[in-house]
Length: 255
Image (cartoon, rainbow, N blue to C red; front, top):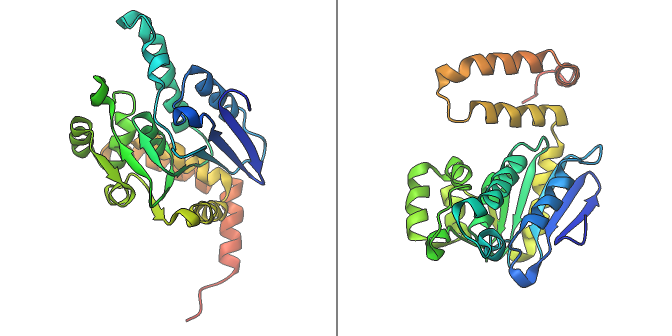
């Protein structure tokens, strides 16, 4: 899908999807969104994970405002673009394989949303994050649920109002990113996370992702029935039965 502002590379069992419009700080538009959706909607067989990265000095500046607002910024005219963005994040959130964000440089607006919707996000120590929408008269409506899922609704609300730029260490303290490393250690840190994902069987990872989506926002009592169904399904699966046999054959750990 190269040529629409997106570069796709297969590196072994991992698909790397790189936003490739550095002159616009990788701000995405409908063409880029459709390119990414086409890729993740038809993953090559054997793909264990997807890495989302950015070309140039920035990770992602969010949506291209010239595309999103357009010349006729009435509510009816801009709604299709907003629906495209909303669908984009929902598609990434529903991805069956783990999604890892490799964040370097600035992530603003929708770029923060990309980090938030990922299952794991590894950031370089020079990365920055900003919910910048109010600065241009907007609000982070479509990404707010994903950001809040990572850092909580109260902090998301405050951040959306202040549009404060935070550094990578603060983002990790808030729970937005999983790990912060020196710039030169970013790719090795991403590979280390991928190795951890590879240590578990793919069907179990997909089932875990689906389970957490289904119980998101529910209390323990509400989630109980879904939890019972999910674990029963996994216990009866061929993948789990084989893994359990392998585990029990090893015997108890020796001191």
